[in-house]
Length: 147
Image 1: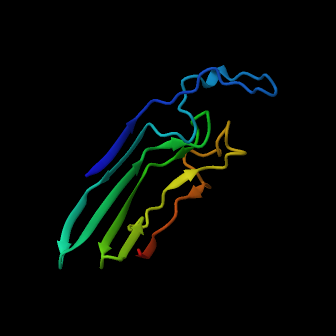
Image 2 (image 1 turned 45 degrees about the horizontal axis):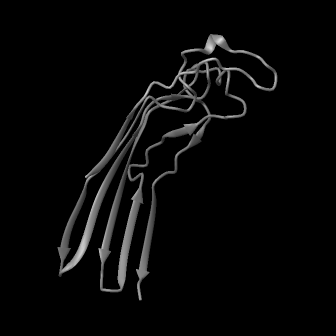
């Protein structure tokens, strides 16, 4: 089993614009945009043999905490959770199979708002009305031949 947890309190301090010299002291103590206070992943893996060939099955849970699109913390990016499934099988001494299903529950997480426009004032709403989504459910498969 592998996993990780990040607990942090990312805050702005002495934010200023290097080009104009403008200072934004009223933003001190606000959560830094697009950086969550909490992130975690957990990935148990089962290892076993079938017909004397190694097989691995894994499930990964990933949790992204709430973030904001802007430095004023006016527009939130909601927290989300995804689940991934994986399989690795050594089919022969030379042949390996890997299967991976990502975001199997088709979670609708958002990664960020518009970094060019939303940075200071948000989108004018408490929750993001436009943002970059995470990838929906997707699958990958590979065969590897080793010689």
